[in-house]
Length: 524
Image (cartoon, rainbow, N blue to C red):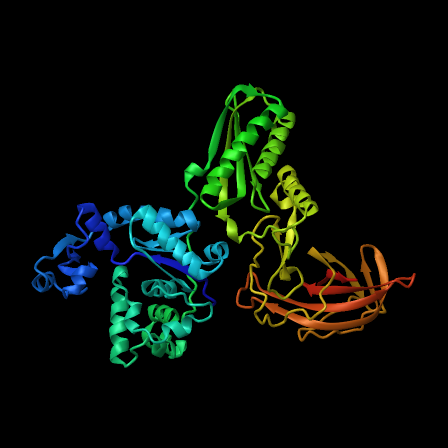
């Protein structure tokens, strides 16, 4: 399982930083945070005096008599960390706050926007220092675990280099003090007693042996040490202040008047997003009439919305409401809410695959037309094919609404045993259509349990038209989800070439399931 290339922003000694900030303690005074009479975090000044994490309170105070001690307070740490998270989010939307003191985000956006990992890290560190007034370190690596360790060292680990980065690190890194996991502490102690003192040594042990000897929780730790675990991120929703609202006084009943108001509101929304380095890909248009009718429509956008693009969509929508909804009164309130925003630097602006940012005027008009059609007929009216993994022809293509991220639901690079061999049908039916396949005597062509034809196919009848079968290939067995009785698929596929009375030939991909033949696709 491939890890996601991740950017982590880490604030060193955050519990101490938060406690000192709340108490207005000068930075030159040594400080520590205590939980259960034990030091869980200490400042750099305290460490210089010999204070260490894990020391008993009395021992730490004996080492440094000037030490100021604070009690551990999760609520305080989280509350004071919010300005830091907000500062990071201004430059890298879609962050996840892992815990107070640590924020992560997919690296693709910031790196793409600022041009390189080093420039993105430098910009984030400076921005956090200016807007939150705290010191931060940034690290990039594959996966949350490795990115966190990279941030603690201020390193940029290139994609694919995570395993080499983790290998020499101490196995104690699997048990960070901030996570407070007793099972992980026991595992680390056992690994060290077994002589597995580095993450690389632990990763070299076969996963099967780890599962058999240590159990499920150790398998997760083993995957962390190997640098292959992908932890899903929980994207923060855009803050509510991104939405803009405008009252219409007097109420608007004509499209031209509504369009004039919409243009000013669109420019306001674009400025709000641009100030945060964001682009809108999903826009909700809401309106309220004098009599209290509430209207709402969500537009999915294929490209970053410019002020003109926002105004166009609002005008199109108001046109539909005012001319086709038979409203009982005029509109007196208009609201634009960007439901989905992304980093403006990671969007592909082209209409067609491979188109760059410098697309021509014709492509821009076509893209606007696509979105216009979606606004009139719904998001699913314009679909884009995305190749994905699968065995049958219908499974190997996913149709996503225009403007959605074009990602496959299943990995096409996996082996997929039993996959239909090339070439694929030019026409694939969403639902296989019934077809008749008979032998020379007019009997049904049967496939045995060993995927063998009992008789030679002679004639195929599809869509009321009969063709003589002149060649065929297969059959190939289809045995999927055999472990799931309710959803198991047991069938056979067959390719046949049929000739019509006028001499025209056409090739079909057939499937036999449940004692019946159906056509899945047609070859040109």
